[in-house]
Amino acid sequence: MRPARQAFTRESADARRNALIEATAACLAEHGLAGTHVRAICARAGVSPGLLRHYFAGIDELIAATYRATSDRMDAIFAAAVEAAGSDPRARLNAYLTTSFRPPVTDPELLGAWTAFWALARSDGRMAAIHAESYAGYRARLAELLAACGAAESGRLAIMLTAMVDGLWLELSLDPASFGGEAAAQMVEQAVAALLRPGADDPGALLGTGH
Image 1: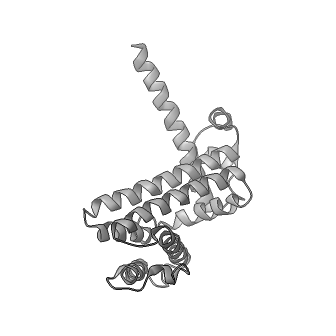
Image 2 (image 1 turned 90 degrees about the vertical axis):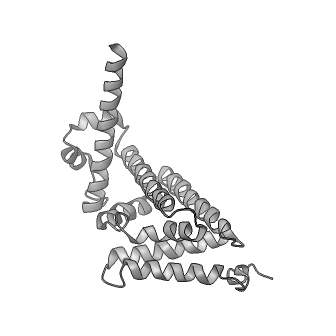
Image 3 (image 1 turned 45 degrees about the horizontal axis):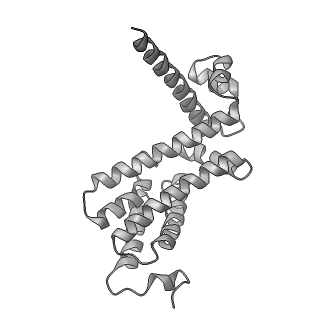
């Protein structure tokens, strides 16, 4: 019976850690960095401040864990969208890019948390490392999907399209009535179609790398 007890304890610990991470994300979304402190997080999670310190060295470590967990959640959402798109390379590419303009990625609360992560990445080395790893992973997967569609300069195209998606997502999150998620998805799909259409000019020329 002892192994079962150990498993139960381990599951309980994971549940408490996850509850603290979820509470941190919610505080960041609603109140920003200024309103995200130990008391607020613990009140939302329904635990004591001592329990937070048991699982995390401090609030900085907890916020970093929240950033990583949020990034992992987004990665899983994008991966699921690609798999749901089937085997067609263009459909998989479009699914990967346009998922950013549909729920749950367009959840208004995500903007508050994400902008807090971005702000901290400018001054906190640990947050900067998570940011770099997350975006490198996103661009690498995007480059693979582009290459599967026959794109030249897939790595540079991935950088350009990532910037486009981020910009549209940010504008859409700040003002959902500005152009709408479907319009944003259509803009990206049109950009992809122009870059990948048969007989199109060398994409490298667009990126300043053509000859």
